[in-house]
Image (cartoon, rainbow, N blue to C red; front, side, top):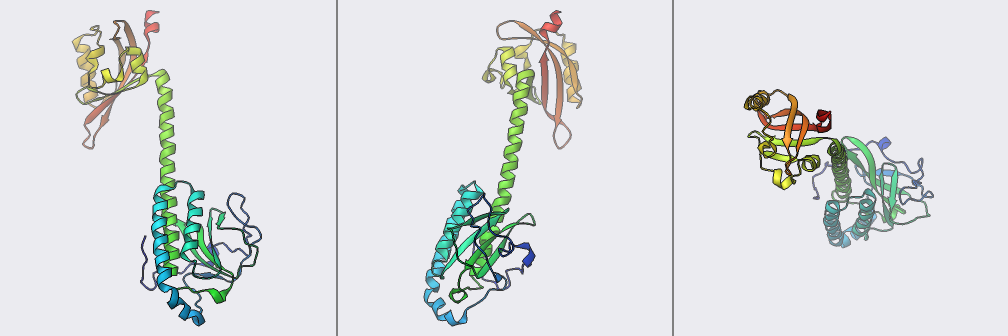
Length: 310
């Protein structure tokens, strides 16, 4: 996160994209909000109001305020790397923003995300002025980061610094929300994969071998049926469970088929570690690399020993 000094860096925002507290009372039960707050004279950061009578006061506190804002940016960056909850993050942002503008008069920061509102504390008085920056995620406005002032005479707003500072917070919050969407999606996908794996473990024997036939993966069902542990199976080829029942021509036909990127199906008699025999109904599917050549094989088997006995 950095402070940009370039003039015109802030884009002009349309008023209808942002919360109008005069028309929408802040009353979301999901966040820390106050239904009694009303606001007037919303002012967006692309056109901040400057109190020229207080310019001398700005000069007196300029260094102190800059240090506060730099410290705020640093703490926000750290929090965005570690916090995973939107509620916790917004409350932290509120705290940091309060410290950043503690020399700027009577005001309070406010964040609205997906109609959930976050404030530093409850306010009962009427708020006269608002500066706002949109929180955008994938070209869609998800909320806003605001600063409310009670008295316009106390406003000391530097367009070159404070507006960019507020916009940077909104931009980084948007990036954090986008990253959270990706992580949540990956977590959901991983949970789905784990569920499918658990279902397959209850029914099917699954093995993945490399091009040379060395076992790379063996699921729990494979281990329970063959009586070998996964450590004993990984790195071995399927001769470890060979029963000697099938002819060389049978095995050669199997390998020739899958090497040509064709699926092989058939029944195989195997030998477990304890010397017992079991039959499996097998499907072997080749996986191709970018050149179209098999680089590994996935075998799914269903034990049919009892069926063969019948």
